[in-house]
Image 1: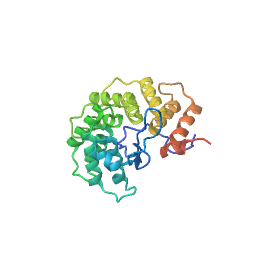
Image 2 (image 1 turned 180 degrees about the vertical axis):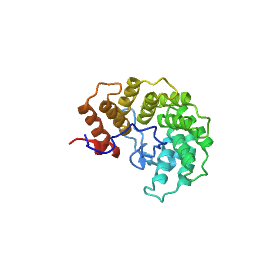
Image 3 (image 1 turned 120 degrees about the horizontal axis):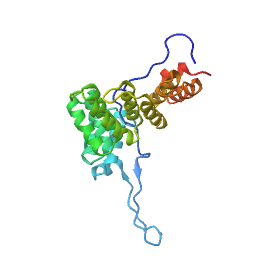
Length: 247
């Protein structure tokens, strides 16, 4: 462990996060048909572009294009255009599109900041089983952004997000158990959720579990295990954990 100075502390609920990664590789998808005996028909259809697929009602294609505009990948970065495609994807029942649009309303990216509008889209995304949207709605309830602060409701949404395998939601629920926010304080339960978040590659969760092992909170004190989790957090890009890794 690092010597001297202030030691690592548990990290609280992370600010809203957004899923702007490109989900589908390649700008076209094949749609040629084949006959029943496996021989390809002579009249092949031209592969459709993402733009065409989006216009024809493919919500994931709309999400893809929105992400390109959000990140400025292959096109000039344009939040307003990104939001147009996220809106279309959301209208087509693509939960991640709803979550991304909600995030942009919460941050004022390409639109006027509007927490209530953000929460409407987080709610729709969560209802469509998008874990990130559930986590973001939980965050809004935990901070009172656009809604009345309500830790119990926050934890309900963190739980749903975690069940949908969003690691940050697991971390946030673990932190609620650690602090006793909306639930009875329970270090063991907190560590269960930190462990799940860490298994889902969430660096903050790994850091928090490492801290529990370092301090012996809800687990037997174990510096070796603490170091393993700090190292994993560091490897996952959670920089605060890196200085506590023992080489």
